[in-house]
Amino acid sequence: MNQLEQLKAHTIVVADTGNFKQMAQYAPRDATTNPSLILKAVQQADYAPLLTDTVAAHRGKPLDEIVDQVLVRFGLEILKVVPGRVSTEVDARLSFDTAATIARAHRLIGLYEAAGIPRDRILIKIASTWEGIQAAKQLETEGIHCNLTLLFSFCQAVACGQAGIQLISPFVGRIYDWYKKQAGAAWVEADMAGANDPGVKSVTQIYNFYKKFGIRTEVMGASFRNIGQINALTGCDLLTISPDLLAQLQAADAPVTPALSAEAAQQLDLEPVSFDEAGFRFALNEDPMGTEKLAEGIRLFAIDAGKLDKLILEA
Image (tube, rainbow, N blue to C red; front, side, top):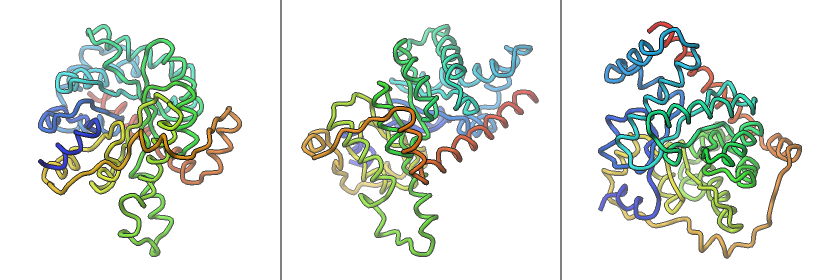
């Protein structure tokens, strides 16, 4: 049995790509997209017609409406491949605007529902800013489930749990990148692998906290750099994995054993934690990695959203 099959016995596997034609061979349950992945896909010959056809069908409408039509068009194609859910992201440029995030989420859900897709197959992806978390809290009360992304800091996870969010996506690889860059020449890869990987440690801490205190929010590790990180989080609720790493897991056959379990977490001696807005902002400020990677992630997604805008205007 290959490592992908072994992983699926303990964890829900999610495909992290906009490339729905490549997805089926890995049989993921869910799929996630983001502005960068959609931008990458629409620049490929296989997917360019999907962009041009959608733009042509909605020409004359405001740009942001056409963008949402393109995102949902990809989501609809992905939902033909996966049996579960697709995550579709709200424009990162709205990350500090609660009301605008809610409005955009309503529009995305409306487009899916108009196409006959029920709400329980969609996760609205929102950056884990305080404003984003409050938007998601409101949306969850309406039965619109959310995936809080760009999550790097423990305080972000705690606030999402308090808000009753459906799912969070802590970014393993980007945390790893930050600590590796900080260490420079002092970084020893072998010493920082597996359970010692800083990204793995972050997700483990969040998972254990949620399971210890009965928080229903699903934990989906994301942004992996190697299959060692994935194997070290076997047992996590979900893991969203790029096609390249799915292929590596499929080609490997070393034993995979669960590293995380709800039962083990419940035996841990942990203290309850909660945050109001001021406490959240201070805790995030006290975490240089979390602060820097959240800001950088929003900037990068905003840049790619701008590039997608440009492609649509030129189509």
